[in-house]
Image 1: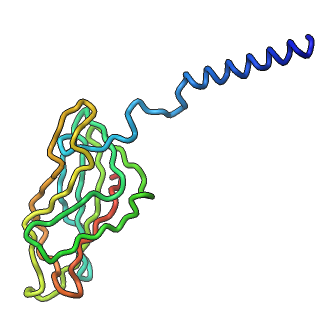
Image 2: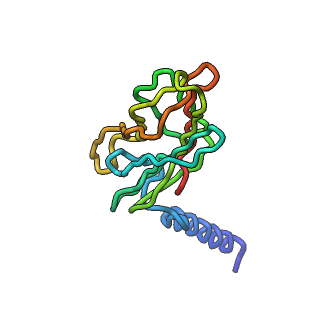
Length: 175
């Protein structure tokens, strides 16, 4: 085979491989969009107490995907407390470096809440509720939902003094 013909054949082979690679998705590619965020209508959300120790209190906000639903979380979600105006809500995670967490069909993800509860009763406050803001208000089908997920607070008092008045919120992690 002459040199010109070999180069033409080699070039056609490379171009053909590039064209095929552009049409065939990479192994492990997903049909679901990776940037889709959960809406409050896609998950069931619960607040569960954790194990206290040495004045430290913990709880998990658990998000469970409803049947047929799939969505993503990344980092911490905005949280606010009702009935606890002196409490400062502080995010513990670096959202830019938090891993993407995907849940679907009954699978769960959790977000840790942490606070202290050892002050005298005069330096404590008991919230009436906790509100978590879902990352999205519209799912891929265009169905809109309220972004606020409000749960009753039944986890006791929180310190509300000059020294201790924080609710720390961790990143969403796979359960």
